[in-house]
Image (cartoon, rainbow, N blue to C red; front, side):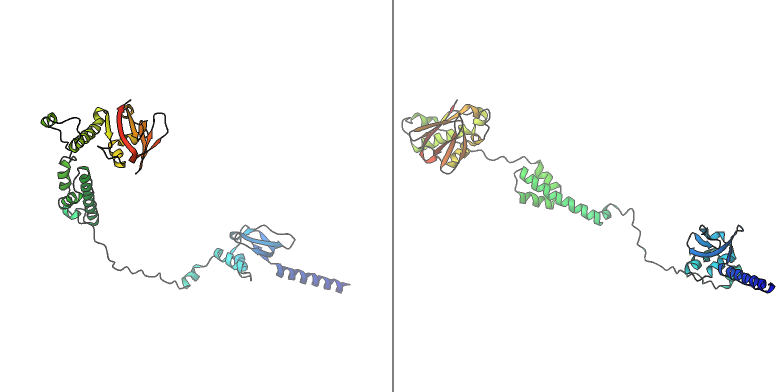
Length: 314
């Protein structure tokens, strides 16, 4: 009986010793002892499976003692060694024993430096810089453009004005700008002398008298812009009716809206045996003139069949 009890006691002791060697004990800095197996190594800490059953919370790495950290770093799990080594303190003797490589020596050599800009180069030298040359070129081009514009405004030859402006910048355009504008030459109309009119038979129509009448009527129509349109009659024998005649004699009567002076004028055009009356012209072609009556619409009149054109007041 006694022999049987001894055998059972030996078996229990052996089992307890085996269990203790298998699980292990892990000590914390606060005096806590954890009995179990580590099952998870994380950056935050370690999770253990307790011998009594269940799992511990994540125990942070700084909570373990130095011996426990070394024990955990010696396990086969690579994560345990990776996370535990930063918290293991290395003795000063071991640090001194390690060979420390000196830092690399930085060699500072001479470099090419840009010469400093002179802040006060002088008035003339400042125009020789890239910015100064660009400004001079812009001013010279503007001088030529101004010369061309002045030539058109003053009715001068553009080549002459631009040439003088290129030789004398600023001064050349100013000279032509101060000159008066060239007005176009006014047409000269010859008047019939009183001596010639005294011996002239009013019933006889000669070529010279026809030309005089035509020029007098043209002058009357030209001056009508200032003095109003006066009555006039243009006949086929004295005037050649064509497209140019209507465009040069009555240019303002082709407008859709007539002016105050044009509203007081009426046209009477005789086309063969037909007589047409209107207030303005809508359009004109090479062979036809289109007259607009006061009632509206338009009348097509053959220019070749026109006998006379009378301008009278309404």
